[in-house]
Length: 166
Picture (cartoon, rainbow, N blue to C red):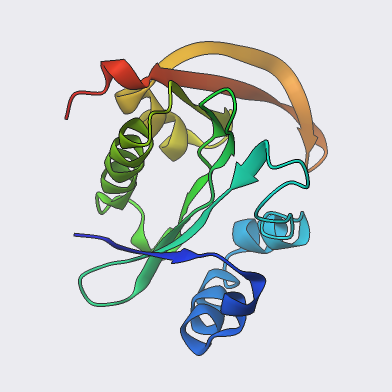
């Protein structure tokens, strides 16, 4: 069972347990690229209040940080435009991705959101498999993004909140 701590201010990112989580995450080259690419650097709320995001640190039953959930959403359209989960490499294939998605689906459905989306790079086989389990794959944009010297596909997934039934 995952425990979710919501981070609501940049000041909270300076707390010791968050620092430890970030140090753990930085062992991964993939996560380092996310940090350098501004994954957590955008403000939690856009100036106009329309675009927003949340940040959750997810801990397992042993109080170890296992994942981050950083959804971006458009409040006026009741649309989660990008769920943005990240499971730490040392905790993949342990069921945390499924648990995290179910929690997020229930959260945004209860808040009255209409739709949830996720975008996944074609090289990310684990995330593709997970998203295909919970979402409808709506399309793939062929060679949409240039990463590490090559073009990769970007897959778009979506689900209507009224279709969530677990």
